[in-house]
Amino acid sequence: MSFRGVTIWLTGLPSAGKTTLANLLGNKMRERGITQLEILDGDVIRMSLCKDLGFSQEDRMTNIRRIAFVSQLLTCHGVIVIVAAISPYRESRDHARRAIKDFVEVFVKCPIHVLVERDVKGLYKKALAGNLPYFTGVSDPYEEPLHPEILVETDKETPEASAAKILGVLEKLGYLPDASSTSHGKRKSTS
Image (cartoon, rainbow, N blue to C red; front, side):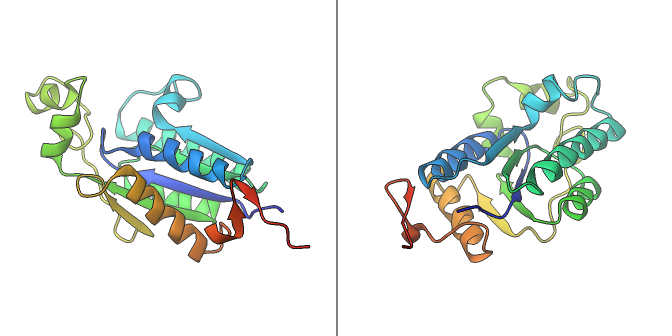
């Protein structure tokens, strides 16, 4: 059984939980027997495909266009792509939506005071002190999605609850079979 490709685009401030959620979603989909799956993490992409880019608005938009291009290629070949990238500008996310077509935007929302507490690297404290330019949400803007398909609030729900919410919407949209049609990580036979 093949699945329709889709890009699940997780956007939100640094430390909101995008990578944690992407990995959890990937594991839950693999448990359902989905093997055509790729996770594109913004930090990993920055160290490889986009290591030539800085953090200016133009470079950030180029970064997102590159991620969208790879996502579109994979999605049109039936791959489920999970993107975990800050993607701070609506314009670049809108470009990704238009390019990919099968696109589900997930706003991973968390208030800044919680993000400061979570930040083990101390980047928020440096940015709030004025020592870190181009830090999204502090010294550089983050434009919240206006109409995401899914909103998860990581300060109010567990990663498991957020993942379940996303999987439920993907089922309703027809990108995933209903969880009851799979058993023990294997697809049920229809014969």
